[in-house]
Image (cartoon, rainbow, N blue to C red; front, top):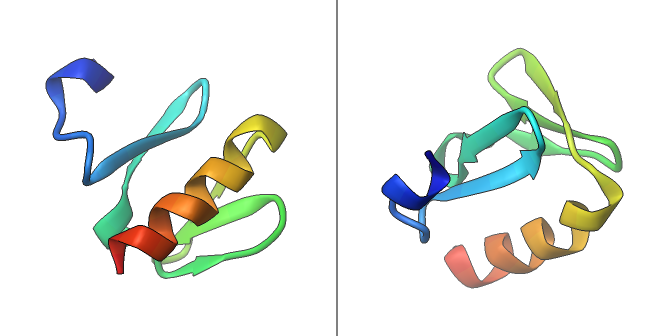
Amino acid sequence: MLQQLPGNYFFRVHKSFIINLNAITAIDYVHVMINDIEIPITNDNRTELLSRIKTFS
């Protein structure tokens, strides 16, 4: 499914979760927040996510 989504807007943060980077409301060490929903971030994906957000904004 991830291959069918635009790669510059969507990112897999966990094996069970793909998120829209535009929808992120907060990030802490182990979760991404989208509104009031906590989504876990795997250790392998945390660094990549932070890098993508820096280049995305």
